[in-house]
Length: 278
Image (tube, rainbow, N blue to C red):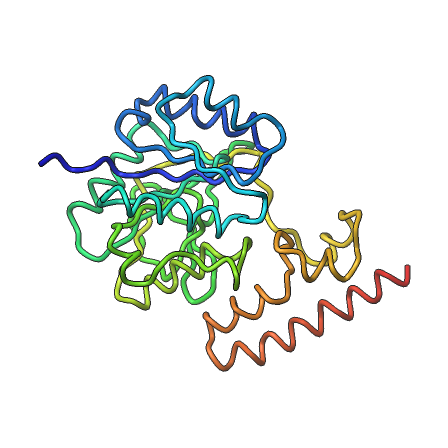
């Protein structure tokens, strides 16, 4: 019996041009034929769904209602891939373009090792600098070309797993961490469940300028138009969602994470009050 195609999950919401660029790139590489590509469109209103249906009939589209966010979109994609009996699942941000042999390298590594998950090394589109793609001891790790580095968790730019991991630890939990931080905590859970995270220094990817890194809290407040308590601290998409921050610190540091959260939340609230007074 032929092995099912590995699944490549791309979560999107109102990112039509970025998503189409990503799919065009994958098509040129031939990956649309080598992978079951699953786009989870979380309620886009910019025509993303129709554009994909018109141009890429071999791409599977799963539809959300706008409340999935990153973690819910990835969870839905992983659950769907599990029903296909695929042996391997990949995450790919639409802002991340793998080099011609990158996905092949990641898949080969997964097939050759047991209980591992893998990631590509990412370069910035703007200045070709290396970008941290994993964490060890809570510190960002940059992997030099040609090196393979073991990490304790990874950012979700371009990551591959054996599908058996779903049976072991489930999928990302959007009720706890809906968006920012869900990738690093899920991979941390994988590590603690006995999987080894490896970033391959020969598997390259380009992170597009469209990707937005999380700014410092003061910069975030200075840039955002809505500084209400709900928008800053309760909205699922906010990088400073307090519930998500609690779970991120709790998963990473256990009981000490609770104390860390209290300190961090106090800083956020004090800074927020100061900005509101301006």
